[in-house]
Length: 535
Image (cartoon, rainbow, N blue to C red):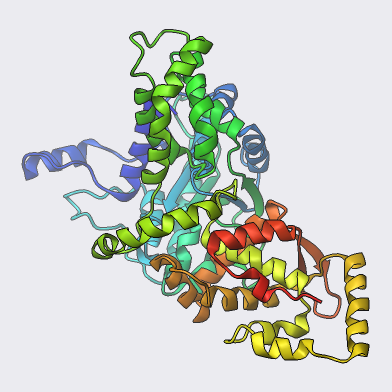
């Protein structure tokens, strides 16, 4: 995205959530506020028109998603169903939707739950934009409407939308006769609600979230389009309240080839930068694929990579590439260890634990070296839980996952009669034929809670708190677990095995091998053999 695009986004953000910059005295402030007359142009992205080809070239790896969103938005003034755009952080969701509206030149209102961190701020931000109201020193930086209740917000929102839609219809008639430039296209208004997953941290999230999804049915206005943007999938927003389900649009994580195309754009010497990406892209993609993190890191690393060169326009040959690699290689491991390191312990504890980490690093390095991919700690425990649920009979969960790890009771059960042993051998042969079994979500979560609460080795403070939140029934963490389960399903580590006709719930099946499960368990220092049922 160019500098001009960034300036335009800043202008909309300033209009939505803050006021104009302060000047020398009160008279100048009043003069500035009076010189600006809000109009319908404030509801569009602004700037130079962006063609569809330029839009695709700005996001070279998101052509499918752009085409899908444009198709769902439909022709001018066409009614639409709500759209739910979701995907991981830094996958281009917000940037693409804003640039699409820049291309279409349609009026929209944008509100992010990251900046509007309470219902009151969110309601007032939407109303201020629809009423073309700008906070400044004259009005004391107050909002146009004081709104704290959803019922009041619906009334104000309905009135504001009717007023804006009528103005847009009048403006459309003027456009058809006078061909005015820079005016909004059409008479529809689109509400873009970003960072929806943050609402789950609000005190009244259990009522606010269903209310947000139910806006389509509450307003019943075909001239209004709703677009939700979230880092989590629609599965994490299940509710007992009935509403029209939005159409999902998924933004997957960037692949290595996608990231290569993104970082090669706008590079003066693409061959030189391509040789740099050959060195850094693969190891860093194992840690993160967030474009913002990688862009910051690659910016400083590229300067170190080019230190032996006198001319940055030089096209490196194979000999030069080897020389650059030899110079640059020591900086890769250092950046991987420091730049993406997350300190979850307080600073005072960090100093006291440095020696422990140094002693344990030698032993843990051989474990971590066996995994050739990056996965969060909780996702690893969830993967192990799925493996155990597929391999172990459900009737043994109580004995295997009790406080004593089921060792005594398990050994006693192993001492059975010859007939019992023959039955177990027959069951083993049957299991080999059938393969891994399926399990319900409730059993997976129960095993996850048990094995994560008795984990060996020190867990970081953040994860330890997550376990406590899970045990206390925190809905926010439950949604995070469901999101990670969805990610593991997308990666084919876990597959959905259909629905049970008696239970009526979805069942899952683990697809990983025992060797793979042992590698993951060793990276956590988790004693998987103690929990694995052997016949």
